[in-house]
Length: 438
Image (cartoon, rainbow, N blue to C red; front, side, top):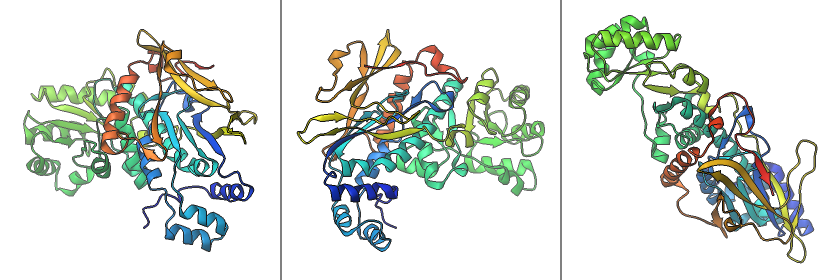
């Protein structure tokens, strides 16, 4: 299979290029902007994720012979367009919010500048990556906030497409999860991996004690035993009978978790296993995690909810042309005016206004026409949000691979500390801070 990412796009990107090559507008300099009109699901903030993946995918956005043959055979575009695509390399520039950054409605999350042809062709790829990964990261951040200091593990691979599962594990880790069950995510992104045994392990053996004894022999006393295949109380007793009070942990995957966790803690303590940790799983989301805040739980494992965005599987981002150059080289602001889908034209700079370290507003400064972009010096009470990601076709260092994931995770945890208290609520609400367009 080809390593090219060039066909991870919609057909109309190429038919627009075909038309633009014919009428001479393909080389017109343009600015496209990726943003969200609103936060889905009544969320109070969003988390940018997927940027490092997108940069690597752009690097592989090449039309090789296999891709070109498909376009020729399917008569997707004409010979002139095929010739253009054959030598296509993105030579424009990308600026945007750092991965792990928070965003709000109207935030210019990604700005793509180049010719019309090379900028429009990235629309589908950019949206597919950032919409998915940011939805997962936003859900993961809410879960991380609800969990407080208790560790979270992502374990939702079986509830997502095989490649989406890897991307979801990456996004969840950036937004505060501490580990994943997905080994490919561990290999590709250097994310800590975890996992012990499923119910099938217990069912394989003649009785629960045999299963526990075999697991401890293989993994040591610090392993976590799944105690709810049959009866939880007898499962706990069997676990401590086999392992002794030094057992590392038990996992509960069913039942009324607050009630069951309290009962298991009391039973473990009665058996002398006062340091044995309790991990709970079983269809957790941010609300279930918050409901367990007062329960004697030590760690959480989250599957379906996190990899599907906890009810909001897409971030709802769009990609719009906001400025283009005229025949004299000056910038002309353009905007879509459709009802309920209007955009704000013009090149933009973005800043997060802070008061004593707490975010108070998102400031989006619009440069109309020939005006220069606003600078940080013009907004001394705010933190600039955009960084260079690609300059003249060259990807900036530090954003890709495991290094980029580590940087994004650290940045996210840092900027999350800027959120006002109301942003930490889980109920449906408006954005935690307003967006001011100036």
